[in-house]
Amino acid sequence: METTINRNKIYLSATSATGGLFQREINALLPLFLSGNSQELLAREVKENKLLQINAQSTRSKVVGEIKRRISAAFPGFWVTYKVISPKQQALMLFFLVLKTKALLFDFHFDVTIPAWKGSTQEFMSYNYQMKIDEIGNQHENVRQYTESTREQILKIYKRMLKESGFLRDNKLVKPAVTNDFFYPFIENGESWFLEACFLSQTEREKVLNQYKAFKS
Image 1 (tube, rainbow, N blue to C red):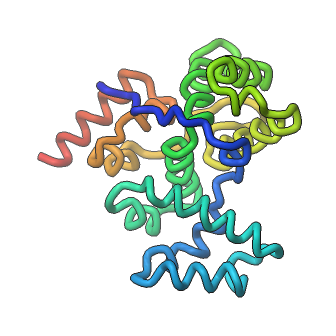
Image 2 (spheres, rainbow, N blue to C red):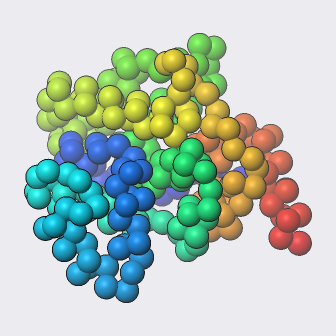
Protein backbone atom coordinates (compact mmCIF):
# COMPACT_ATOMS: atom_id res chain seq x y z
CA MET A 1 0.00 0.00 0.00
CA GLU A 2 1.24 3.46 -0.85
CA THR A 3 1.79 5.35 2.39
CA THR A 4 3.71 8.44 1.31
CA ILE A 5 2.80 11.63 -0.48
CA ASN A 6 4.72 13.91 -2.75
CA ARG A 7 6.44 16.06 -0.19
CA ASN A 8 6.40 19.77 -0.73
CA LYS A 9 10.12 20.37 -0.37
CA ILE A 10 9.73 24.13 -0.31
CA TYR A 11 10.58 25.00 3.27
CA LEU A 12 9.09 28.43 3.79
CA SER A 13 9.86 30.99 6.47
CA ALA A 14 10.31 29.89 10.05
CA THR A 15 6.90 31.19 11.06
CA SER A 16 5.22 29.12 8.35
CA ALA A 17 5.95 26.02 10.41
CA THR A 18 4.25 27.40 13.47
CA GLY A 19 0.78 28.45 14.54
CA GLY A 20 -0.69 25.33 16.08
CA LEU A 21 -3.77 23.50 14.84
CA PHE A 22 -5.95 26.65 14.90
CA GLN A 23 -8.91 24.51 15.95
CA ARG A 24 -10.77 27.29 17.75
CA GLU A 25 -10.09 29.77 14.95
CA ILE A 26 -11.07 27.35 12.18
CA ASN A 27 -14.28 26.40 13.96
CA ALA A 28 -15.15 30.08 14.34
CA LEU A 29 -14.35 30.99 10.74
CA LEU A 30 -15.49 27.86 8.91
CA PRO A 31 -18.95 29.23 7.96
CA LEU A 32 -17.22 32.26 6.44
CA PHE A 33 -14.72 30.14 4.51
CA LEU A 34 -17.48 27.92 3.12
CA SER A 35 -19.76 30.78 2.10
CA GLY A 36 -20.13 32.06 -1.44
CA ASN A 37 -18.67 35.45 -0.57
CA SER A 38 -15.90 34.23 1.71
CA GLN A 39 -13.34 36.83 0.60
CA GLU A 40 -15.57 39.72 1.58
CA LEU A 41 -16.62 38.13 4.89
CA LEU A 42 -13.06 37.24 5.87
CA ALA A 43 -11.79 40.72 5.01
CA ARG A 44 -14.52 42.15 7.22
CA GLU A 45 -13.59 39.79 10.05
CA VAL A 46 -9.95 40.82 9.85
CA LYS A 47 -11.07 44.42 10.37
CA GLU A 48 -13.89 43.92 12.91
CA ASN A 49 -12.57 40.97 14.98
CA LYS A 50 -16.01 39.63 15.91
CA LEU A 51 -15.08 35.94 15.77
CA LEU A 52 -11.32 35.58 16.10
CA GLN A 53 -10.93 37.67 19.25
CA ILE A 54 -7.29 38.38 18.41
CA ASN A 55 -6.19 41.87 19.37
CA ALA A 56 -3.82 42.86 16.57
CA GLN A 57 -5.25 43.22 13.08
CA SER A 58 -1.91 42.20 11.55
CA THR A 59 -2.02 38.95 13.51
CA ARG A 60 -5.63 38.33 12.46
CA SER A 61 -4.60 38.79 8.84
CA LYS A 62 -1.76 36.29 9.20
CA VAL A 63 -4.01 33.74 10.91
CA VAL A 64 -6.65 34.02 8.20
CA GLY A 65 -3.98 33.63 5.52
CA GLU A 66 -2.57 30.53 7.19
CA ILE A 67 -6.01 28.96 7.60
CA LYS A 68 -6.70 29.63 3.91
CA ARG A 69 -3.62 27.64 2.97
CA ARG A 70 -4.68 24.73 5.11
CA ILE A 71 -8.27 24.75 3.92
CA SER A 72 -7.01 24.64 0.33
CA ALA A 73 -5.43 21.26 1.14
CA ALA A 74 -8.72 19.69 2.29
CA PHE A 75 -10.16 16.98 0.05
CA PRO A 76 -13.79 17.03 -1.20
CA GLY A 77 -16.19 16.29 1.63
CA PHE A 78 -13.57 17.00 4.29
CA TRP A 79 -15.66 19.59 6.09
CA VAL A 80 -18.86 17.54 5.82
CA THR A 81 -17.15 14.84 7.87
CA TYR A 82 -15.41 17.37 10.12
CA LYS A 83 -18.64 19.01 11.25
CA VAL A 84 -20.24 15.79 12.56
CA ILE A 85 -17.36 14.24 14.52
CA SER A 86 -15.98 14.82 18.01
CA PRO A 87 -13.55 17.66 18.84
CA LYS A 88 -10.73 15.13 19.32
CA GLN A 89 -11.36 13.65 15.89
CA GLN A 90 -11.56 17.15 14.46
CA ALA A 91 -8.12 17.90 15.89
CA LEU A 92 -6.74 14.82 14.13
CA MET A 93 -8.24 15.95 10.83
CA LEU A 94 -6.66 19.37 11.31
CA PHE A 95 -3.33 17.68 11.95
CA PHE A 96 -3.74 16.06 8.53
CA LEU A 97 -3.97 19.54 6.99
CA VAL A 98 -0.80 20.54 8.84
CA LEU A 99 1.07 17.58 7.36
CA LYS A 100 -0.26 18.44 3.90
CA THR A 101 0.91 22.04 4.04
CA LYS A 102 4.02 22.04 6.26
CA ALA A 103 7.00 20.27 4.71
CA LEU A 104 9.12 20.59 7.84
CA LEU A 105 6.45 19.11 10.11
CA PHE A 106 5.70 16.35 7.62
CA ASP A 107 9.38 15.40 7.73
CA PHE A 108 9.35 15.60 11.53
CA HIS A 109 6.42 13.22 11.65
CA PHE A 110 7.56 10.60 9.15
CA ASP A 111 11.32 10.76 9.74
CA VAL A 112 11.44 11.25 13.51
CA THR A 113 8.09 10.67 15.23
CA ILE A 114 7.02 7.45 13.49
CA PRO A 115 10.45 5.82 13.93
CA ALA A 116 10.30 6.82 17.62
CA TRP A 117 6.83 5.24 17.89
CA LYS A 118 8.25 2.03 16.44
CA GLY A 119 11.21 2.16 18.84
CA SER A 120 11.59 0.80 22.33
CA THR A 121 11.02 3.95 24.39
CA GLN A 122 8.31 5.70 22.32
CA GLU A 123 9.35 9.04 23.80
CA PHE A 124 9.32 12.52 22.33
CA MET A 125 13.00 13.50 22.33
CA SER A 126 13.65 17.09 21.25
CA TYR A 127 17.26 16.34 20.35
CA ASN A 128 16.18 14.08 17.46
CA TYR A 129 14.08 16.86 15.96
CA GLN A 130 16.94 19.31 16.32
CA MET A 131 19.09 16.87 14.37
CA LYS A 132 16.41 16.69 11.68
CA ILE A 133 16.42 20.49 11.37
CA ASP A 134 20.21 20.35 10.99
CA GLU A 135 19.87 17.70 8.28
CA ILE A 136 17.31 19.73 6.35
CA GLY A 137 19.36 22.89 6.87
CA ASN A 138 22.29 21.27 5.06
CA GLN A 139 20.25 21.51 1.85
CA HIS A 140 17.93 24.46 2.51
CA GLU A 141 19.55 27.75 3.45
CA ASN A 142 16.45 29.35 4.96
CA VAL A 143 16.15 26.43 7.40
CA ARG A 144 19.87 26.64 8.16
CA GLN A 145 19.33 30.28 9.15
CA TYR A 146 16.71 29.49 11.81
CA THR A 147 17.73 31.02 15.12
CA GLU A 148 17.88 28.91 18.26
CA SER A 149 14.71 30.53 19.58
CA THR A 150 12.92 29.81 16.29
CA ARG A 151 13.94 26.16 16.40
CA GLU A 152 12.72 25.86 19.97
CA GLN A 153 9.42 27.54 19.09
CA ILE A 154 8.82 25.20 16.14
CA LEU A 155 9.45 22.15 18.33
CA LYS A 156 7.22 23.53 21.07
CA ILE A 157 4.33 24.05 18.67
CA TYR A 158 4.78 20.70 16.92
CA LYS A 159 4.79 18.98 20.31
CA ARG A 160 1.62 20.82 21.27
CA MET A 161 0.02 19.72 18.00
CA LEU A 162 0.88 16.11 18.83
CA LYS A 163 -0.78 16.46 22.23
CA GLU A 164 -3.89 18.17 20.88
CA SER A 165 -4.39 15.61 18.11
CA GLY A 166 -3.91 12.59 20.36
CA PHE A 167 -0.36 11.47 19.57
CA LEU A 168 1.33 12.40 22.84
CA ARG A 169 0.59 11.89 26.52
CA ASP A 170 3.08 12.72 29.30
CA ASN A 171 5.90 12.86 26.73
CA LYS A 172 5.02 9.33 25.54
CA LEU A 173 3.87 8.72 21.99
CA VAL A 174 0.45 7.06 21.77
CA LYS A 175 -1.78 5.96 18.91
CA PRO A 176 -4.76 8.28 18.37
CA ALA A 177 -7.95 6.58 19.51
CA VAL A 178 -10.24 6.41 16.47
CA THR A 179 -12.30 3.66 14.88
CA ASN A 180 -11.33 2.24 11.52
CA ASP A 181 -14.16 3.98 9.68
CA PHE A 182 -12.62 7.34 10.61
CA PHE A 183 -10.09 6.67 7.85
CA TYR A 184 -12.59 5.89 5.10
CA PRO A 185 -12.80 9.49 3.77
CA PHE A 186 -9.00 9.62 3.58
CA ILE A 187 -8.84 6.37 1.63
CA GLU A 188 -11.70 7.52 -0.61
CA ASN A 189 -9.70 10.61 -1.57
CA GLY A 190 -6.31 8.99 -2.16
CA GLU A 191 -4.86 9.99 1.21
CA SER A 192 -4.27 6.52 2.66
CA TRP A 193 -0.76 7.60 3.73
CA PHE A 194 -2.48 9.22 6.70
CA LEU A 195 -3.10 5.76 8.19
CA GLU A 196 0.63 5.36 8.64
CA ALA A 197 0.83 8.90 9.99
CA CYS A 198 -1.63 7.79 12.70
CA PHE A 199 0.73 4.99 13.80
CA LEU A 200 -1.13 2.10 12.16
CA SER A 201 1.13 -0.83 11.36
CA GLN A 202 1.17 -2.37 7.89
CA THR A 203 -1.11 -5.17 9.10
CA GLU A 204 -3.51 -2.65 10.61
CA ARG A 205 -3.49 -0.54 7.46
CA GLU A 206 -4.26 -3.54 5.30
CA LYS A 207 -7.14 -4.46 7.62
CA VAL A 208 -8.62 -0.97 7.35
CA LEU A 209 -8.26 -1.01 3.57
CA ASN A 210 -9.99 -4.39 3.33
CA GLN A 211 -12.80 -3.18 5.57
CA TYR A 212 -13.15 -0.09 3.41
CA LYS A 213 -13.35 -2.21 0.25
CA ALA A 214 -16.02 -4.40 1.87
CA PHE A 215 -17.91 -1.29 2.94
CA LYS A 216 -17.87 0.09 -0.60
CA SER A 217 -18.85 -3.18 -2.29
